[in-house]
Image 1 (cartoon, helix red, strand yellow):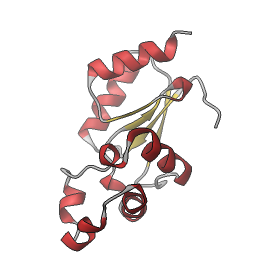
Image 2 (cartoon, one colour):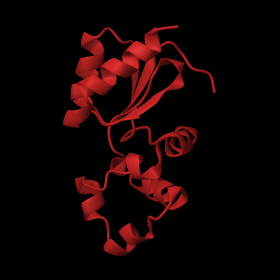
Image 3 (cartoon, one colour):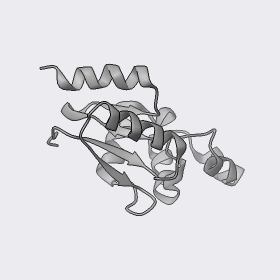
Image 4 (cartoon, helix red, strand yellow):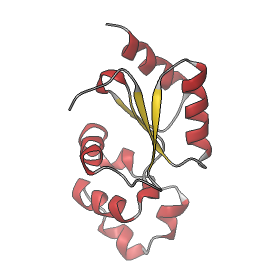
Length: 126
């Protein structure tokens, strides 16, 4: 997988955390593309990458509204990366947002200014 010099932000546009992350990236001068997974879905290759690199527990937002609305029986089936991926395919909004692929291929999930500053620094240094 090739890694570009720009970041990719995966999320949904009306999510407050995604808005904060995008504002931070813009203010920091980080070039990024936005991937709206309400419209474009979660790319299968990206999902596999996230689950491997970050772990399914980090990728799945079990505190969010989407998760809480799922049937308890379905929630109980999520026990590993494969079952988490199946739920994400059906309910993309269950992904903790945003997921960011930084230049040089590093990944992060969620948003904190300190984490972004560290990753941005790591992305720009040789």
